[in-house]
Length: 520
Image (cartoon, rainbow, N blue to C red):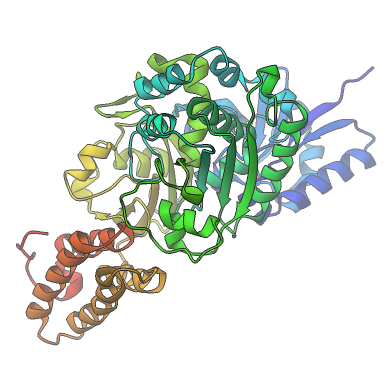
């Protein structure tokens, strides 16, 4: 009796955008017409977006990949015997041997693209819930210590030690405590949060349950970007499945501990990615930044102690508990421990997700993984860390990707988003866009951000029009200094990063003949 061949077709949003659903339907139809029994699994994406739709076939040698598969390729693949790993123009060999994947260190993303995102059996077969089971054998303080010893810092951009927040919440007496996941992924060129929620949702759920046990929190919210309908749907289904199986609810795995989890759709505002504006939005109010202190860890959601962590931060917790702090902290360097899922986007030939230990360089990401620019032209600049991140010239591409090393040159690693521009980019226009973006997205609470960004657009326009150019450059620097030091949150406080880096490294784009020597 013949055994059904397993075929994997991604259900990730990026794959769906290029026809993954159509490809899956055609594969099923072709198998039926040819009287071939198949097992069609909708997995997460491997993160090699230039190869989507990436179709994989399980063979005795391992999973064999074909891509990018368009609807017109399906019949040809069957004719070529792709169910047995047959040769075809789209044949990529064993998936695990593709250099882009093989050179990575996938810890948080270890299951990504391998499992069915909504199969609990798949998840548990690949170390799923091992961290939670371990956590249930430890005292809450021991769980916090594991996270502390692993050196896990917030992956949302601020890089604040996660265990400090947890320890503060655990030590603050309250009748109710909360775990809030910031999944309002709004930075340009970022998609690791979305991939996690769509491709391995149980990992995030497990991390949030562990955080609840460690801090005494019994309620959690995932605040998801409104533009992520697929992620919201997958999370809601996964939460339902986890509850039925006993991983959520009133008696987690018979421990007597409880944790309830809900998904909330975000307000469509970039500033709601800032933790206090997020909390305001969760409470049903306008998303406006709160003054600190008090910090959310002592007075957060509804005035109660609250852990606010980003998706990747919480999703990394299970492997730390499962394998121990020493395992995780042995990746990385300095105070930047573990790995980060870097996301390569913009003008790049091989855009996608690369999980690597801290310490690799931007040049390695751009060429060893990204394959250079998509246009074939020289890369001029790279913005790292989202729309408020600095633009890095080639002279800085060999700095190790490390929080402190980047801070030393006025840059940020942030959420790991990398947007590439070739030599046709006009840096004065990109600097102007940064100010305009801030003006549009500012919550309006503080004057340096609200007014400074509007004046910034006007000043850059005058520089471009050569209206008292050198005097306007001095004014722009003064304005950036005010925004850096006077803004209530990072929205206004970081907008000068892209502006000043563009001005310092690409003065010719502002009509300045020589590099401006003034300090940033």
